[in-house]
Image 1 (cartoon, rainbow, N blue to C red):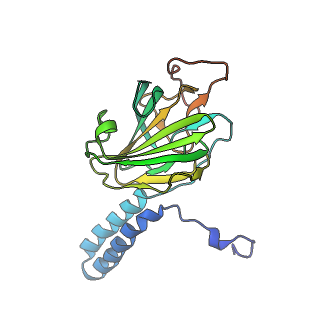
Image 2: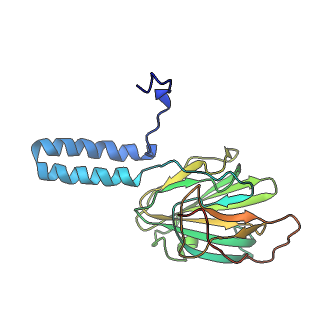
Image 3: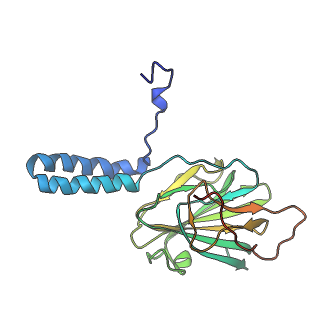
Length: 238
């Protein structure tokens, strides 16, 4: 029927991250085998398969089209919004930290359109991702994006359950606003270092959606900010 309507079936996309299939297919096979031989065990594997499918879900997002926006790079709860002073990653601006529980979508998306100028893996610990020191001590992958004179840094940070950071990009790759660039498996944290050229709207405790929620918007060229702007509600959230 779809083909009769002129739709290209080869472009139909399952809303599941492809990194999840090596987990989903073996579990589903065990579930089928278990249901045939030991229904109780098979039911357990089927429930586990369902959770893994849910974890690796990758829904489409309504990406804002207004110019000058900086979007959330991940789903989750904002646990910190703090000014930067002589930070090694970015000397000034604002740090926004997003905690992802195992129930959040774990796909990471580009906060702005630009070119990947650096990807740096940093080994570390596996502290609970909601802790403030996890930003510095935990295993992480640091992605730097450049858009003209604007440079934005995103950290993919592993947590106590997350033992695998997936980054799909390398230096020289170009990303569009809200484009997928990676994920972190089973609970994590994502930090975004926002330069002072942006007014920050994010606030602690706020729930955000990657590639959809607005964290900040660009200031007029004449403005010369010396600190992060006062946070105000993100109107993109329901």
